[in-house]
Image (cartoon, rainbow, N blue to C red; front, side, top):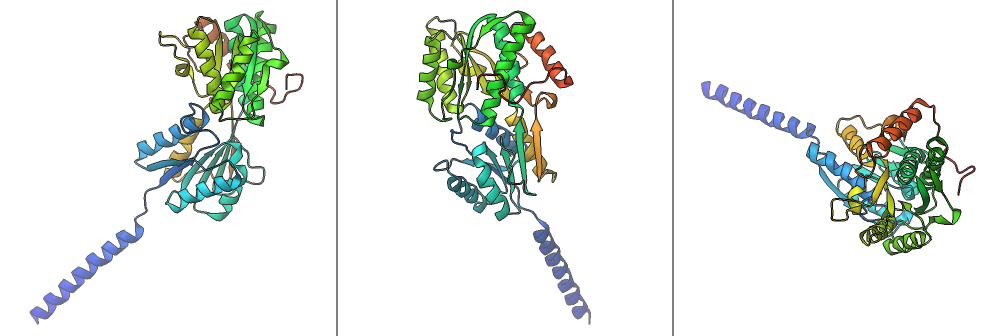
Length: 353
């Protein structure tokens, strides 16, 4: 009888341990894997793609997540869908897609995988934002405005130009805001900056570094003193041309885009040819979205529109090429934009298109 009771107790104990193990196995959730698909540029474009991935990677490192990116074979919707699907099939359930070119691909994929969290940056998904997607757009015209203001205050007099990528809303708004900033400086601070329509150029590409250098060369040869390079990798070509000319002794400047590109203009002597940068906080937004996903707070189905008032658009708070006086004036105007006293238009009415 004692042997029978002991055997029963042993079997009960084994069953309890097995049941506990089975329950633990059943409730264990695999760690989130986060990824990104690059836009038409490269991951090291020192601009939009790189800035976004740095945010994803920073969050992944902080939360101990597996992280990677894919560069599509091309820039068609099919190429983007394939890349997103490849990441999904590899177990990635958070994917950031930086660039308006992803709009159709995200619209398709969000309907295919309801357990996939998607973030598209620079497009409002007019076809509809799925419950598992977040669309993020920035007020580029506001950061462009502050960059134009700072540029005019730095130069005081002279000529400025613009090197854009594809002629799309986000790039156009950088251009229009930049012009309004220059005009504001001319009207309120007595600067004398000219803007010739022929010096405002869209290259049609975000990935042609040689073309960017060629266009910048043309603009500088025409007497432009500073070029706003808002063209991804193509814009890096413009930065390179500025750097080469500065190294040869010319007093020329470039304005960076998306992220603080000050160190991209490093002249090797402790100085840089980057006057300032018109930034939008793609790194911070990418980080925040991963963090929200990890915490179960991913705001699917929403459109985020971010600008100066949200501290997501503007220029770097400090730049050795700008005096404290210039930085103070820009900060004052930024406060007026936050307060709604100064309104920056997001259209090209009355401006160089």
